[in-house]
Image 1 (cartoon, rainbow, N blue to C red):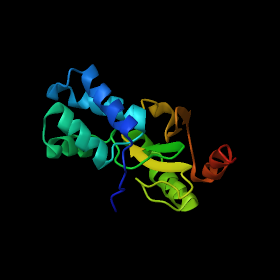
Image 2 (image 1 turned 120 degrees about the vertical axis):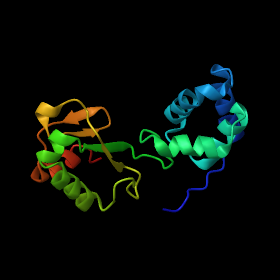
Image 3 (image 1 turned 180 degrees about the vertical axis):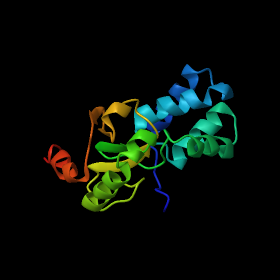
Length: 161
């Protein structure tokens, strides 16, 4: 996967410094700073990580390690409608893998990628706590239960603009 090069605007750098300051520039607040930064910017490219490392006075390697360790963080922009397919045990047993395959086929992207138009991104998650509705798909905050591969096209049609 190629790295996306981002040029941060001065206002973005100031916003990052402000976020770090909210947490008193404490190295122990790294995860909270990253969460807040991702909420604001949508993702955490290397350029954002560099500013955070500088402001918290920690190594860039440590910031990068945290960003890549926790699946919640992303270094690539998510689509306007982020799709998450639950691959926890109940969903997996009830066919989540086939549902995932159908989303990949229809969107022509792999897990971790975003469609060329920026409309959809695809990810997997471990459990959404709706095991009785397995297999479960989330698009943004909306949850779809008992999804079958045949239902994927209809779900995607809801987001046609």
